[in-house]
Length: 287
Image (cartoon, rainbow, N blue to C red; front, side, top):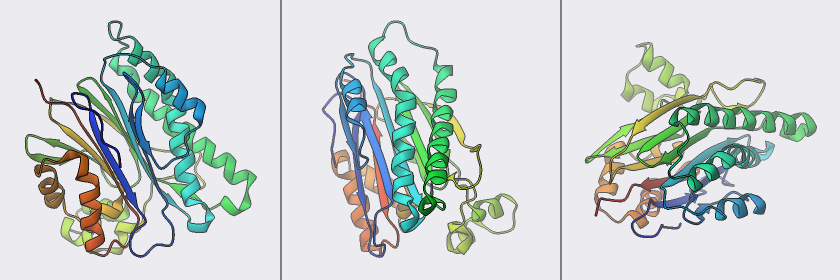
């Protein structure tokens, strides 16, 4: 886990194998691209990627966070998550560097949704190429949820059942929708939200990267932020055991640098039947 420097976008991140699984197939990346590289990740990012990020120099607040939950076990779930994040970041990188180095001449904010979606599409193609070239990887897949903060605006993209939350004025709001059969049943009025939490359908994810489809179908959105707001990304290993009320209580404690570690500790205390990953970014308070 790392925490950022004072008076800039603060972030923390942590990931754990949990109490049951034999390997950790969750992957994450979080970092700011200005005024210098500050990042944390359990993904082996190419060194040239990190060098290009660290060459940025600006006082503009730009940060990116990504969480992926790989599927496929020994069929390559961890590799799928890693490749997806690497490809996603490589797609965004040229524009992120331009944004960080051009505080006055800002690019239109409308460009970020298509750029993030292009990152998801490129990640899909990377996985499909690996599946075609390696039979042992034919069943690998991954979810992918990302958050991009440019000054006071959050852009997010999402496919699967990881989640993106916004903590604003002492309230936690879910910005993404789980792409699970349980959530579809809830939307159709066939089961209640409480029933969905106990249903085996909550583990059936119908939108992922990898598999047989060639065109992924991610969601995307945009949210204006205020100083002090926090964005939280997590894998379903957290929300399987920890309620939104508990996440909110953990944020209220106020020690942002330890937030992700504390949430994972709570999950482990509850039995942590899956890998669990948490990433959080907070905009600095006004001074």
